[in-house]
Image 1 (spheres, one colour):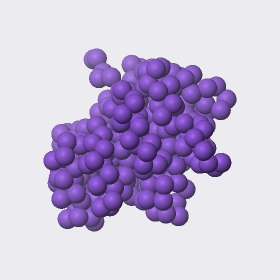
Image 2 (tube, helix red, strand yellow):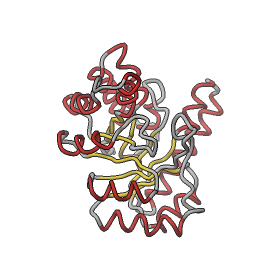
Image 3 (cartoon, one colour):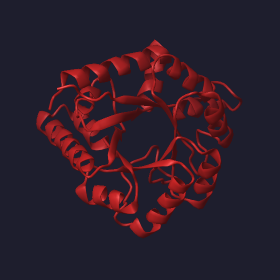
Image 4 (cartoon, one colour):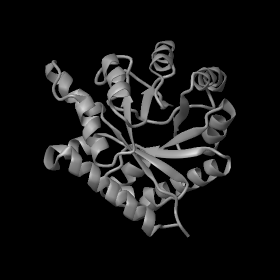
Length: 252
């Protein structure tokens, strides 16, 4: 059976993190996006946080203007971000939970608990021409709520799978991988487009890429960190190769 291709969205947030440690304009996250695009990235992801700890407003505008790849705008569900997103009009946005004290996004969005707030928020983004995905844990309740709220896509939070891989415990790894697989199968069966991301690396990406219902992976911190040793272009190319191998080999 021919498996559908899988896309790689490269998150360039932490190029901006490095820039912001000293101020100024170097390294430039837009340049990083252009490098990723030149070696086969399928999209660029950037998270404009409330506190602007890495990506800045002008970064989002330049990414939309200068990079010829689909732009995925990660954002919290706030009035400020809604205004910026509808003005920027990226290809897509991914709504994520946001906590000022967290180092990175620590879990999925509680769509079920915030349904009545999120549904009109999603509707306004959709009306403006932005495709919406919701970053959620691999739970049926959250998947059903995402569908009910009007989102056409979800991104499965793979953080628990990443943590399981760090333990090298085969049973725990298999359990968390199965959670992702079942969630992807269930969501796809409901007609949702399925993406995944968080904590994916060269070592753990292939089993996730092998899940046929997942059509996109968004990977950032690992690629930017690995670029210190092998360069960003080579890191992106290697991730694409591993994803392709995982997809064609297939575990399911």
